[in-house]
Image 1 (cartoon, helix red, strand yellow):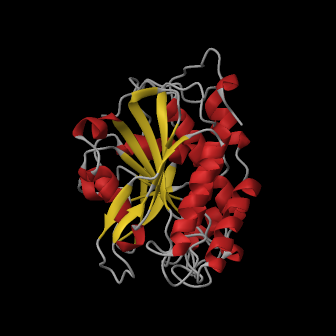
Image 2 (cartoon, rainbow, N blue to C red):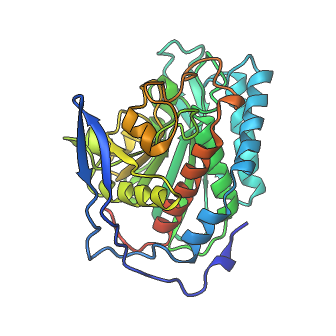
Length: 354
């Protein structure tokens, strides 16, 4: 577990993101865009001890143990972990237990489920929120994943992979790290029913508490068998697609961290309306990590990242076969290390995105 021993005097360097050519499909044609260097005013403690050590300490083997636990929960509760079911409740208890065991302050605030989208039940449901005991509580760096699956399957990639990544990062970071900003982990329910958990969470905060959240990083599907390497933030014509001001900075840091793990040319794409949406509405800078779902990998992507061209990123997306054997540990490892580095970067940063 990485705690206060990771730091002493922090190394504070100016982050220069090298020009990286990214390829993305736009209207059927190949559009090439370039990541510009971060501004000279970028105030951060980017690649100091915490960033380097946390990114190096996280383990896909330990993350797999969390995925196995989520699979076992689904198997014991009708084959899924959908919000409003006993499988979801067991998932909440599992995640809260892991975080409490690591020393975190954990809460399970409720949100009101609508009963729409074919839900079996409505009424109060639980999110899981945990945060470090250290760092400035007036400046919160937040990362989240959705804890529910669809009713048709156990949701081990969607989004057990995000949940397992956050649990591994949290337990390696520890509850008392030496950080500039408080770090908060969120596990939201009801994402598959219209981002109900994250929406309820944001609406349940006071204006002052919303203002304390300096950024939110959403993690949704990061271990698909034919996965790509996509980053969200700063791309699009309006805040709904690109996020508020500051979102592009989050995306550039995450893309750079992915590159440091050996990923060639991660692509920056638009937001599509997941758990980041209520944060965008609240004016909070957002970033996103996702590896693709039912779309097909292009030949250029397969050449850069491996995998099969013209095949779905995840053939088991929202299906019963989204089980433990659907997990691509290589994709999981790249994303988890990049997410750990990105989180540590902003946790130790004095930059203000908003």
